Image (cartoon, rainbow over all chains, first blue to last red; front, side, top):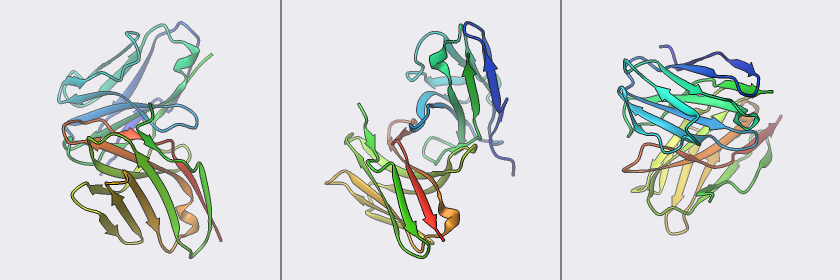
Length: 113
Length: 112
């Protein structure tokens, strides 16, 4: 079946602009996660959804970052007033439940100029 | 603080030989451990996992060993193949939690 998909694959934006990154999880997966991976580092947790609600958003670095999952499927990560330090690969993952392994999408490479 | 550490940024082995990738952790609450493989421009792909109630889990050419007293785990790949060349990430999770905590990754190169 189809895996996790993320759009766009690449996004270049100017400092101060607003961006939205989209994630389509595997069908039927109730848990959805966002991670951020900087060059030479492992992925870092941002936020976790169980269904429509954000069950854990403690990884969001500041209030410029926000994520939604209004119908319990597709999720959007929103970044306001982007900064150059936000440049990274943003990864989305889904799983049938929190006790299972997480399946990752290909990521969105965000570059803030 | 880095709760999961992979101290070797890179490892090079000959095709057919064993690859051993190591990972250390500091958080005693971690009780589920996973290895992911990542190719360039792709997301991490789940490889193998182990629960803290076990000390070994095997799946084909891949075996993960867990030493809880040393807070150390390792991934053995035997025999290694050129297609195994990728970045390998160790990750850990608490029973009560959902997030994965990743190490920095080890670039494995298997030479033909």
